[in-house]
Image (cartoon, rainbow, N blue to C red):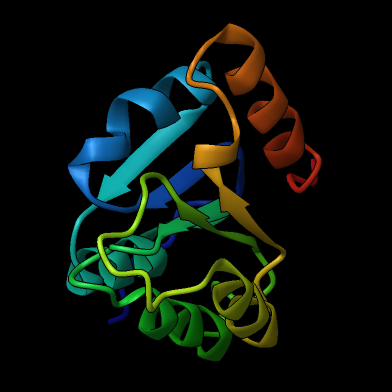
Length: 140
């Protein structure tokens, strides 16, 4: 028997990222039901159990498995159609990675937005601007 799915929750957001960004994401999305996952397996199980209004995937998620998770979401009929945002929460160590290339690739995989948190100050006005962008993607 397949796992029982919880109904769609307008305020439930899946965060697939490294722990370094938890504090800021929690501040940006305070009041929402946030589910943090660290591995591809945890993300897949969460997507099987629940429906999310939004999925945020960090570039460094599970040793850079962001693209794998995007493909999984698109292929899994139960989670397909939810808003997806890929994000960079800190600067890259390698200059070979370009933001433009990431934006193109994530859009090609159905992502609604590539969000570079380094462009926004980590303060109340910066976090409010990011929250506004994310809330625009969440459909009631």
